[in-house]
Length: 98
Image (tube, rainbow, N blue to C red; front, side, top):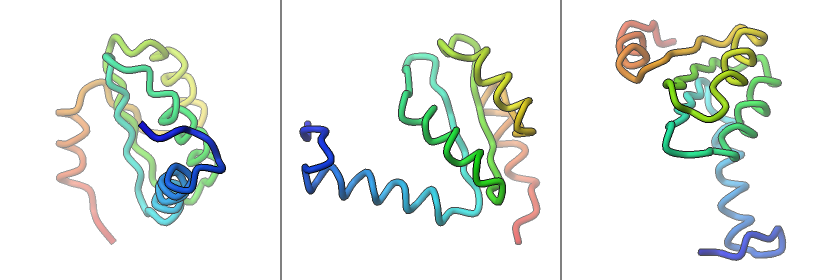
């Protein structure tokens, strides 16, 4: 419900907190829910993919409005793409953590 303007202190603090979290994370997982448009998540995926030092996993089930874009983007950037949460979670269970 906050007015989305860079001069709104609460809004700016929230956005900067999220960006810092993404920047500091060793791994970032994106889930694109078919019931949403997720424009901010799409922007964040592009931002994080440009940082090559991050481990990125993406889950994009059938029905997401920009699934084709996500598929090409992930292939282009060599980002693992999952089509359902179950497969993503299964792989997470067996990943080696440093």
